[in-house]
Length: 412
Image: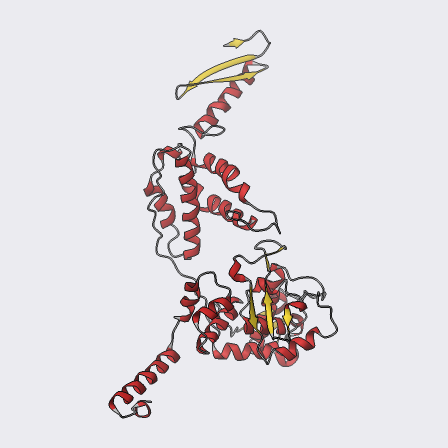
């Protein structure tokens, strides 16, 4: 096109039957501008057409369809909304696993086999991780199909690879005994014991105020949570999270002593300053601190200033006051704790205790704050040797009654 009347150079070129024009004060600038437009067209940037790449579409999809659903911290939950943490999950799965494999491909060229390969690469990882990747893939390509950018949806029918399933478990008898002994001296002991005795989610314990403990009816009112990834207090994830849980008799005197002289509007389990609400980071650090003390109580040793010491030499003092020491300062030697001992084990233990106490599953589901009773059933059906022996005794007693002889004592 050359130099135009307005004093600017313009150069043109066709790509995929579409004409692109580059403009600049010099011919060199015009050619550079044109080259960039052609490169963007080949990459599918700035346009939504048959040349749009998966990467370009993912950026548009996130901006137009996903980001507007993110609610501000503390904002009331609504259908279809999500937390900032959930949005970050979408970005993380895209940038870390999906786009490196298919991001450079044009949307129209992607086939189901390529998306299945993305999932197959997650084999051996957690089921939750693989499911989240599939959710992102399916949502992104479904919208591309609905937006008529592709003629068919290649994400239909994607299958998860062989994965590992995270297992939430109850405390063993030994772990429970060790945990309760540690509760007696650790600064977070009452918080840990309350989690164990009420089955609360850790996030539900953070916003609890003293007024939520009704010592007249001996019930704990749970109606708040801290929003995932934030410091904001919000309603529970579902309406089922709002509930009243009985306080066990042995816990009540300790709670009353701890709350004595305090305002009903103070936090029941605050941070070290005695005033601030626990954050998710604080919950994590307090559990780590408690675990270290529990480990030492169980026989592990710590390294401090290049000397090995045991609990007999006050080895737990630092963690008892909330400090999270580095491995170089206070490393654990010969840990006695299982790798899968996590804070959520306390909640699972409470549910298992309900089962062993004969609490009907519908009542247990309410006390746990489960939206789906099947979630409770999954825990109630966790059986082991103790349940098997109990069942055998019951069977033998029943058969003894049928035949007129009680064979229970002969068998066990």
